[in-house]
Length: 333
Image 1 (cartoon, rainbow, N blue to C red):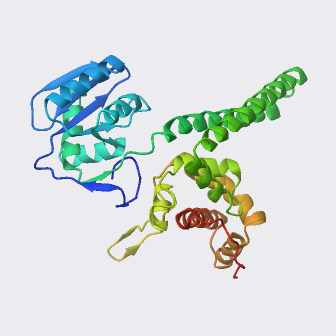
Image 2 (image 1 turned 45 degrees about the horizontal axis):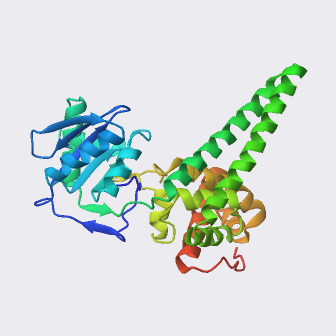
Image 3 (image 1 turned 135 degrees about the horizontal axis):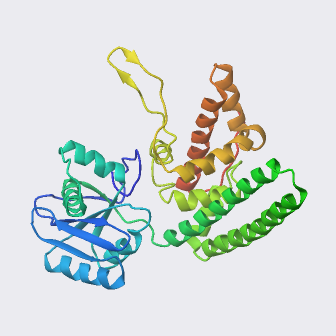
């Protein structure tokens, strides 16, 4: 799996590439430096992680016939070089750290430094066979903007907690002023984000389809659009896995463990959880029926809510896939 699509085995828009003829490179990313290795070669390169370094890196890779490059996601420090290399025509795989660690264990690689890590990533890149098309470049600035809005929302929640615990009226008033100031900023930033989405007809249309589902507000619709660009192009099972809402078996021999969710895109999942609770009790008749049926069958509130969040995402994926707005059907109990 590449591009961080946890649990997904989506084939659409992917390419099968031969390891025999493809020259692969690996990049270990640092805040200031990039260490580069080519699979099967002793050559190494270190460049600055900045525009000039990216240009030098691209020229060096082209001279050596590199076609495919692997790089490990590292807190955003990889984003600029990934964009630069893709613009220069390279196939770039962005691995999640857990994937690289798992591959290191598989090949019994215990030593670790920047050069060794670059060579390991190059080897991992050469072993990859399913290569996804790069994500929509328009979504990266939208995702960064959305993250800022979510972080501001978290700040507001934290300030509310401080205000509740405070017994000093002057300090309480200060926290209230800060909360109101951040809320004003939040409203303005969210309007700007939606306006940026509306500049693109296809993204705007997809946003409206997502928001048509009962229980999905505009805020949640934006989160799904930005955090799940695959929506409508993957199966229901794949969509659930990407969001970290797919139940996985935990069986071994005669033992039958409880199914559990794991992995996935955390901020996407949090947005779905936030939408599911009111949807279950107020807005979506089908989810109400699902929740009641699960509770009647002895499931806990938490398990039922996770199942409803998964169901809500499936509704959204189906609506986008068929390209027509949500139409509520009578709930069955």
